[in-house]
Image (cartoon, rainbow over all chains, first blue to last red; front, top):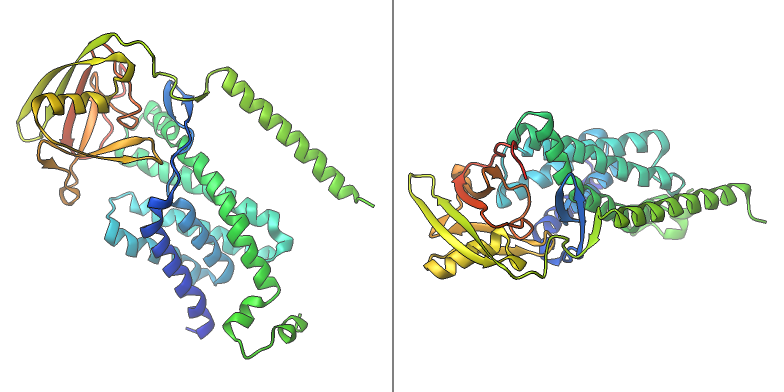
Length: 207
Length: 158
């Protein structure tokens, strides 16, 4: 494995692990706004740390090749689940994040990872959230709910506040983390940071 | 000179934003979105509920709990029974979910190793929302069961 690849993989894995294990106490309280769907009243947002692993998964898809793009989110989930604990739903959560990474990899392969693709990057984030939530909630239904239409509807109804939060938090993290990294990569600042011997103006002139 | 593309983008943006705002106001008007929990009432009549604790090993505790209807939730009923009958309850509040999580009742702690947790049922149906979000009414039966996670029957759901 090349030094460059390690320099991308390690920070992503560390950021994912540290973020998932430490940021839960920093989440703001859910606002006093409620949503009533199918007779069930729930807070508008159920706030979790999905966006941390989603952001890491997207970046691994954008910055790495196909194989390693999957390795990063799965490693983060594996190592943190060993500490936090999990159950059979891990089959769906791990694969869900791998799907987000693959989606990002596919976009990068076709359109590149740069600011010209900013709307596609944002769209990938939103599509990733919807794909992940559809997939993992299907897993919840399979594992814990009655296997009836009513059970399926209840499962997806209870997931609405999570999905709304996932959409909001991931849109923000794509805007404030993923897109700036796309800019840094486009201007080759990242290459300069990894290889300080090269002067940045020389690096930019390479464009 | 503003390009045609920017003008189209702004027009689409304004239309989408307007429709979104109108949609949100419609949902607020219909009571789908509310500010403050819609089922918290200011009435303070006393209601009676039956609380059953099933430890999963044949032991069963039953308590008749009287509580003000204004703050009668599954959580407040459990805590009132705990205070009145002297058994401890382990609970942690999660502001991001606006509810408590019950991890221990009367010295029986959740045990992830054997996949057993405390779950509540209301009138025989699995409690789908957090304990602070589930209102209770006069005559309701709340059951706490120490068991593997599962959703019970949905029939007869209130």
